[in-house]
Image (cartoon, rainbow, N blue to C red):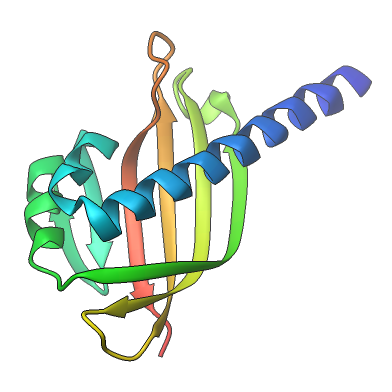
Length: 137
């Protein structure tokens, strides 16, 4: 039992480090280099933006590039590992972000974003496999 708790603690700590690094990279890219955001997504990733579904890294980038310029601030970050029994051996992390975004000088809007990040066994890089964004109105 102690070994299982210790293993989960290591996975949880790793998920927190991954989530912290990820959110900084993601929102830096989203706010300043949106044309390069496809590098963060798996080729077959899915995104739901306020109820609008988009599939594929290139299509997600095209969708996001049509949004006005932005400035994002993080209010809260929650990260957790997914037990690899359910992920076919891939290291997987769920990241939930609460924050505010200001588009092109408009008033701040609160939002929630959920990301599922996966890293195949042979890879050192996490990629977004799913992303859900919703304004909190």
